[in-house]
Every structure is written in structure tokens, then in C-alpha cells.
Length: 292
Image (cartoon, rainbow, N blue to C red; front, side, top):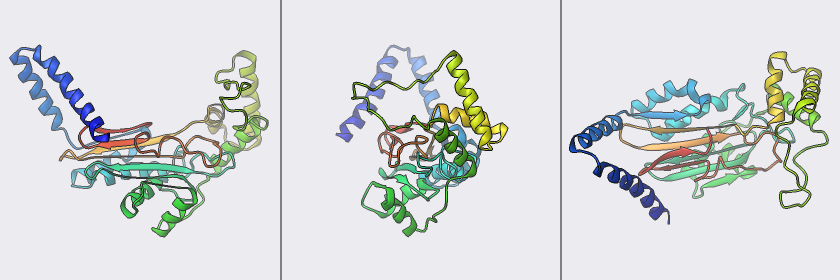
């Protein structure tokens, strides 16, 4: 099934190009082919979300000097995972509703078409590298929860507290503001279910902002951080970073890492660590991430 789908995508792209080229003059064909050859030669290439930009240069040099494509992508996403100021991944990621940071990640190695992923991991900062360890050292594709954490520790990853003071205060702001309104409640199949208000207007909007400003002040959130914290509370983010890397030989790999939906129910796992949803790499077609 996967082989036929891959064949369909690849041949569909080639077929579409062929139909277009048949309508062109010979001179135009030669010109387009020359352009294609020129573009194809611009390697290596690394693409990531904006929070990985500061880590591209080192990874690019590593890739250009013969480094593996997956290792290059992992070098990029390790930066945000290590950064306590980035609350979308790794250390300092926004926690679940109990104030515990739970991380998800996956990776896929194009040259070997192998993959690994982890979900709901606590106390381990660099879960993208744990996903690679799952790929390399197990016969599985995905490990979750306590099992994934124990696996990481067994392979030398250190346990540490991932909840920074900033993320803890944003979580407290969310708890205070939603003290009678959290993720518990009727599901979408319940006749009494109503979609959450995403854009309150007028006086209601002003009232909410005033309430949040006061709570943020009482919690000691610095004035320069209050707007950021309030935005996270009103619109819980699902911050993620994806990175794909292509070397001069045409080998390609990708990885995705995240702290998931902010203030989620414990154990919630989104699309990011799912191979084929959060990340997919096909040596014959390309590489992509669901977010980032």
C-alpha cells in the first residue's frame, strides 16, 4: 500500500510536468531542464521553523562536511529543546493541566526509511534524540509515557525538572483564570456540547483582559511578559518545531519535537510524534512536518 501510494505521488508529479512540457517549444524545454538542473544542484538544504533559525549555521556546516541528514536535523531542534525561554518544546515547555511538562517527538531517516517516536515523556529534555534512540535500539517505532522515560534513562539521558519559573507562572495564570472552566466536560458528541468562545467581543473581551492583567500582576509575572502569558492563556498554543535536511547526495531526513497543546489533560498525545502525521520522509518524494 505504501509503495503504491509513493509511486502514485512520484509518477503523478512527473506526469503533470510531462503534460506541461509537451506543449512547449524545444527551446523552452531546454531552458526549463537547465533551470531544473541548476536548482537540483543547490545542496545541502536545511529547512526548519522560525525558532530553529539560530541553530541552522552549525547544522549546515555539519551537513556540508559529510554529517548524516538526521543528525543535522536533530542538531537544529536540540537548540530550542535546550532553550528555557522557548516554551513550545523541551525545557520550559508549557505544561499539562497538572503543571507537568510532557513532551512528544518523532524522526525519520530517509536513506534507511527507519523511524522512531516518543509520546508523553516527562523529565527528559531532548526527546527528539530519544526518538532516534528508539529507532536505533529497538524493534519498535513508538514508546510512550513511563516506558519511554525509563528507556531514555537506560540510554544515558538525564532526568531533570523541565518546568521553568516562567512556564509555571503562565500555568498558574491559566489555572486561576479557568478555575471553573477547564478541558473536562462534555465531548463533541454530547448534545449539550458548545464550541469554546475563541473571539470574545466588546465588554466581555475587556473584562477578560482586565481579569487576566490583575491575576498576572498578583502572580508576579514581569510586566514585559504579561501580554505573552495572557495570549497563551486565552489561546493555548500547540507549539512545535520541525526540521528537514537534504545533503549533496540527495539523502533526506526529518524530525519534529514539541511540548504539545498547552494545559492539556495528562497523557494527551497529538499529531506531532505520529509517523505520517507529525513527520514523514520519503527518499523518492520529499520530507515534511505537520507543524513548524
